Length: 219
Image 1 (spheres, rainbow, N blue to C red):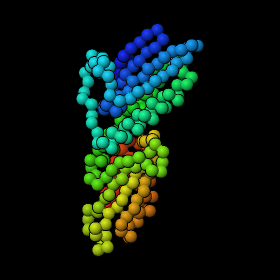
Image 2 (image 1 turned 180 degrees about the vertical axis):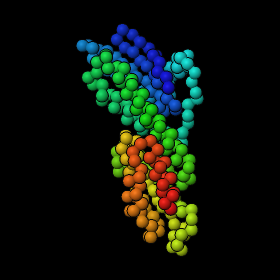
Image 3 (image 1 turned 135 degrees about the horizontal axis):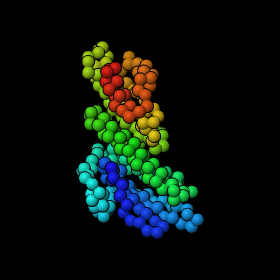
């Protein structure tokens, strides 16, 4: 990651941050007004050629990652929320707090990027899976996968599958993921599996991956 100053004046400064993907690159513009009050504008997405050139001049860079289209939508949603939070949190900002806003932004972007990497990997590992905004919970995403038992079970379980929905909260991985299971096999104890997962899969990066791996072991 790199921050560079893209412009500065007596009462303004703009900085740009290059994310691991185009979606997580962000530009912050600070304006110092009367009584030293500061207003902030945040814009995410592909950086201008001038900003990219300045970042390249500041040191070596690596090619930005491209994600699954659903993960790209996830990133866009999370970065949009970040920009809104920056605007809400800067209503009474002083010049001495500018560095805190920059630090907060970098930490938040890093968390978003780590979540995106994990989701992208899990989507690649689960052939029958998809990611979409949650229909029930604001600012959350649902990862849904259809798992088929690897081993042959009772006659009534043949051709069965387990429908898994993991709800990813906006502040993932700081809080637990939501877990919902549905099985086409009546003998499958989905309630017991959910209870077990909630006990075993603790909050933290990798929770989605751990939940899927544990479910595969269970079936």
